[in-house]
Length: 123
Image (cartoon, rainbow, N blue to C red; front, side, top):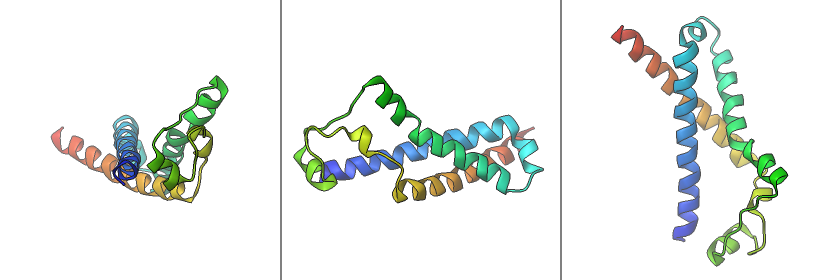
């Protein structure tokens, strides 16, 4: 059970890092311009960027012939895979990923706005 929890926590941690990176980067570079646009513009940019961050590496791994496997029987049973299953090919976008992208977008938008407000109050 511990390995399964670690897999999910790692997925959440990567999502958190991507959100902070995307929000801070976008608003540090173009924050003043984004504040003049409707909110849907930065939200859309963040959503697309975060979705790409989550899936860009899958075709790269496949085209290079790289694979990821696990020897953990606990993970095999929980995710219904075998020891020879290439985990990369099983990570196609699904409803869980899309929900995570919405959560990441919300978090990135909040982080970006927070950083922008903090930087404007300092100067």
